[in-house]
Image (tube, rainbow over all chains, first blue to last red; front, side, top):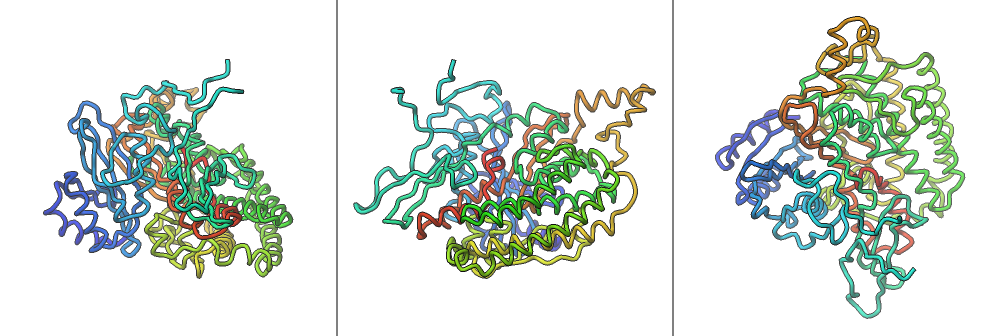
Length: 157
Length: 405
């Protein structure tokens, strides 16, 4: 962990994002969905965040915009992580895909699409990955009942 | 049966690109792959042209389930992610919660967690190497390695009460301290490990058949491996010394002397050898940790998460209420989110947790190394032969529990 890089990063990006803070030793950038691809491109080329670790979403029903898409990146050169957060509305839960920048985005975006119904514009393959073809709904949304069952093969009676 | 059952997956390619290739489905339950995975491959003779890898057959809604249990009650579930090294999952999850609560572990707990993480890493690597060697026909090597792994499992059962799913981590500490004689048995097992892993080195390292099957098979470059999200032994086999234990030390790793073994080519042989060398480093670390193990409590003295002593629960009202609140409502974790990553046996295991300040998580997300690896594993298969899928898949060590969650 190099705190120097963290501060430099925060200073240089602070003007371009809605909010930049350090939480539990990790830089957290909050930004508008439209700025996502540009910022990630800069993180990747200028600051060498070469490892795309994770993408997931958090569902906040009752808040607008409802979904918070959360990204984690790691820089193998600087050994620091950064978290990106962007909010998308329920009516159009779409962000730009990171597939042009990272190969690992293919699978992780598919999972997030499965679980939350976030649409990643530009990902050519958003087929279900953990769920099956034809599954209705997005199970990790808070309004999906925990006990709801939709068996693909009918239960034997 | 004449009922036509629906197909759970839609293949990425229904038609072949050329007229001299065929599409073959492998899995999801295939005797030669350990792990429930489906590979749809387009073959040109014996060569794999394209591969479409599907996981999800062991999906059981882990993350959904987490949202309706207290923070403590999740510990048995996280055990079942990577069931070859359950303790590493336990400790990574507990550390994420501790980070939000601002808890600093006791020195003894820190050293014990590090020791048990390394011990689990040995068990995990033994399983991976043993299984992938057996799939290549090396039965003796399999029996040698699994024998040591079972000594480790039984030894961990002495400590935790279970062979595989330990539920041993606690928020702010551990379930119990070491039983008497545990450390002397540990040294016996490490001695046995050295004898039998030495024999496996003798059987495999320069074995013509093994080298032919694994050398220059499933090759990936460092740049590609990083682009496709590979971490852990697979990334290190390409020659990149990237290890979270060294790069962003957690637990007691900063105080330890160890090396990060790397490969040369990033092929199956290198992945085998990196794992073998990593186990040696783990043994070296365990011996240092045994020497530095301090006396003292294993749990933090913090009423927000540590259960009071049973004797006090029965004799004083404050402890009774404390116990009741912790069990019924769970530890109250301050609102916020945290991401904690540990170097698990397969790569970066990350827990992203979100709390709204109650005793139940708002969200728990696992960054499972196996899942990300499955997203890039087609790169290791395309261009090689159909039979090479087996050693390649074995060397990736996909664990269905953490991949599909």
